[in-house]
Length: 491
Ligand code: MV4
Image (cartoon, rainbow, N blue to C red; front, side, top):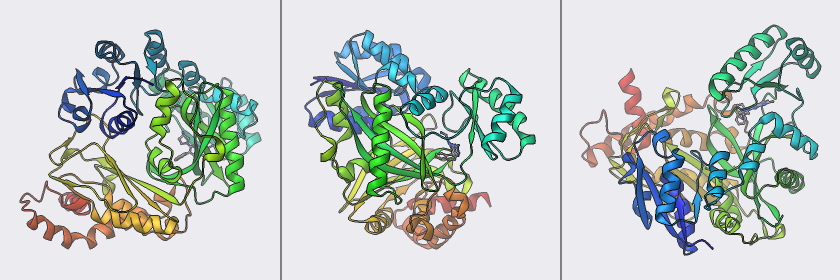
């Protein structure tokens, strides 16, 4: 096992990885940007080093300074967390070249699924269902018209190098096809320096279901169950659960074995996720994520597997400590991402200082966070304050527990999306498990959020005076009231 590992990340995920290291007796090295000097993760580590100014391009994305720091500190491995350098093939390769173990997949494996067209081809060849569409990038517009006509409208144009929905366009009628392709190509070119786009059948109300996989260096691959992440906005997930409400033992067996096949097809090692779109009883390979994901806690909570520890074991050359038959999803887990953002203003980030911060606790509650009272959420990084995960014996208990945990959470000083989560937990469609990637719009959740905020207005005002927070314009008392104050300011 490693003696010392550098964590090339910040916030809650840096702490999550360091927790695994501590339990395995591994010394930890944190790297921090100028604005993160006093952040919890920098203090949690055994050693911490500054790596540059706040903008990620000058710190958390700076391979040279991170590798130099790893050498200086004598770290034998680097864990990239998620985001930043986690899916950067060049970084994985550079680590290997410099004799530092990248705690993640090889550069080759990362690259092989970086192009969506190539990934689809590989998966189709491995016998995994893919969404019908053009086999290659669009080069000839007449041919594109023929392909679209043969798969039938609506179709979707996607950037092959894309991510996060960038360069994606839904096309409902033939007249819009060519302009959409040309516009997608322009966006793809400017965002990814690669104008390659392809066409697929557009699925109207799909569910996003993904499988966690673990693969060691001896060819052992297991899946660690499913997650459903349909509730998202602008391609950012907000609520995830495990298992998916539509999962059955039979479907899990089928999708799980396809997920394993997908990993095997690219000689994958370490932790990864196979994403599927699910529609009308059928599922299709969408993408592969070659990292530990934000929502990994729900998998840990229902299976008992410590995914971060497994990653470290795999990277250290050990065999998987589980076989497929050891993996069981027990009960139900839900994660709400608590962000500093305003659900009433298109989920715009609302950075600022946390005047009061107190997380929930008690039975079945897990909190992954890297903040504290007095901490400032800056605009430089994502707006995640905390991941609130609950476990229940069944989905209903998990929902009621989440409602209770959201009630307990106190965040003062920034507007948060807590009222959004409260609204979803009370929504009848959510409670019935009727989800899709268009959930928020389909059920007008924002109107429900306004009602939550209105109903908590009085509670907030009372809390405000109890806490002695004078400047009610800036100070948000509980997340719900935070949104209210921002909303009223705008009126
Ligand atoms: C789709 C789709 C419907 N049909 N592809 C969005 C991000 C990108 N990675 C893939 N995405 C989608 N691809 C076809 N053929 C709908 C989406 C989609 C989506 C997928 C997963 C999670 C959330 C989503 C939100 C909107 C659209």
